[in-house]
Image 1 (cartoon, rainbow, N blue to C red):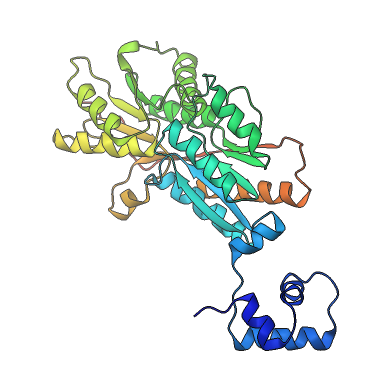
Image 2 (image 1 turned 180 degrees about the horizontal axis):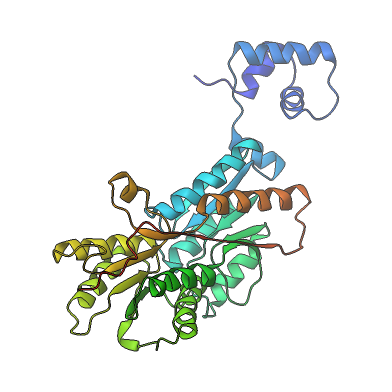
Length: 340
C-alpha cells in the first residue's frame, strides 16, 4: 500500500502540516524535526503525487507538445529535439496528436489547460488563411506561453521556430533545372498552410528566373500525406507530355511518389527524376538514394524548447521571438536528367 502524508505524520509524531512544509521546503521546521520526517519518508518509500503537488502550487513541471501527425518521421525528430532540452531542465512532456483535425486540436488545448501545464509547443493544424473565433479564443484564454514550430496561426502572433521553405524549394527546383530538366512537376502540401505556400513559391521562382514557364498541368495540389503523393504520381506517369522530374513538398508524399513509381515499373532517375522536401531515414537504410531538402527538424525541436524555457525563466516575457533556420539541399543522384 502506498504511504500517505497522514502515515508519515503518525510515524514521525508530527502534524500533517509539518510534513507538508518539509515536502515543499516551505515554512520553518526545526532541523531535528525535519530530519525525523525525512527519515520516515525514506523508510516508507514515500513518493509525492505530481498531481497533488500541482494542486498546491498551481503549476506542474510539465509542458504540452501538440503535433498534427505523430506517424510522420518529421515530427519524430522534432519531438526528439524537444525532449533532449526538456530533460536538461527537468520538464516532463504530454504529447498530443491531432491527426490534422481542428476539433482534436481544440480538445488537446483544453485538456492541457486542465493539466495545469507550464507552456505549449505546437505545430498548428489551423489553416493559415482562415479565421476561427473558437480557436483564437481558446489560445488567448490559455494564459500560458505558446511556441510555434513550423506553423502559423492567422490573426495571432506567437514566438516560434521556422524553416526557410522558399530557399529550400528554390534550390531543389534549380538543381533539377541545372541537371537539364525543363518539365518539372510539383506535388504541393496543403495550400492553406504557409510552409506549403512558401515551397510552391520557391518552385515558381526558380522556374521563372531560368525562363521556364510555370504550367498548371504540372502542378498537383497535395495534402502532405502519402496517399496524395501516390495518387498524383500515378497521374503524372500516365500523362502524354509527362514531366521528366517531380518535386514533392513533404517526406510522406515522397514515399507515396516512390511507391507509385515502383508499381509502374519505373526507375529513379532513369525514367523520372525526383527531389523531396525533408529527409527519410528509412530510404538511406534501404540503400535508396533520393535527393532531398534537409530541413533541420531536430534543431527546430531543440530551439523551440529552448525558446519556451527562456520564456518560462523570464516570467512569461511577452517579447515575440522568431527564429528561421536554413535547410540544406542534399543531392544523391535522383535529380539527374537521363536523355532517352
